[in-house]
Amino acid sequence: MVTNPFDTINEPLEQRLITGLYKLGVALRSQAWQGAESQGLTPTQGQILAILQSRSHDGIRLSEVAQELAVSSATASDAVSALVKKGLVSREKATDDRRAIALRLTDEGESQAAQAATWPDFLLTAVDELSAEEQVIFFRGLTKIILKLQQQNQIPVARMCLTCEYFRADVYHDRARPHHCQLVNAPFGELDFRLDCPEHLS
Ligand code: SF4
Image (tube, rainbow, N blue to C red; front, top):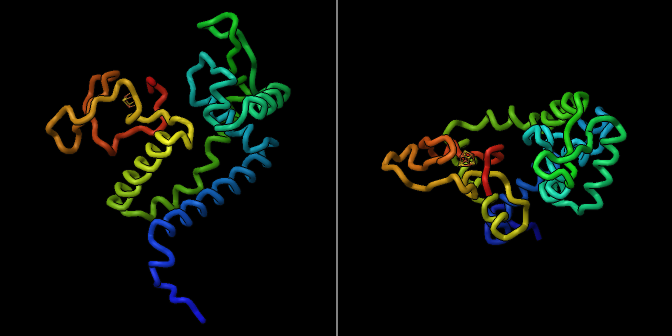
């Protein structure tokens, strides 16, 4: 017997949203493999370059890389060693703790990182298909999902406003910009929320 394709009891909207997110995940992974292959990297190595590029020039620890990628220390260590061999990453003494090692991009690593950071850009034309109103709703939904997953420890903590020590919620009566960022001492609204702010303080 043919099942009714519009039977939302069998496939509720939540389930179809998850299917849609899964398909986006597949597309991102596939694009990452293609981008990585063209640069002679693995997707993990490319992600590490992009992480190092988005961090301060003080460099970051191996443990932070592993945490951000949600992989084991051994996996992160192997990928970093490969990047060091390729001359894209250097291991240096951390400026804030001489006993610790900080990872930094070399000049060649900077250029490869800039390229790796563009791997997800294929989504831009698709996102541009959404109206301004649809983009707002989509962004709001994504922010909520990311926050919930963080609270459940299912994804690494993103450097987003909602988890930042500088964030003050609902300080102003202005409905468009009710929140306050203490770092820059300025009001902002939910459409200004950052999902990967370099100044995030946790
Ligand atoms: S803009 Fe950056 S520093 Fe300010 S509240 Fe958001 S995450 Fe924190």
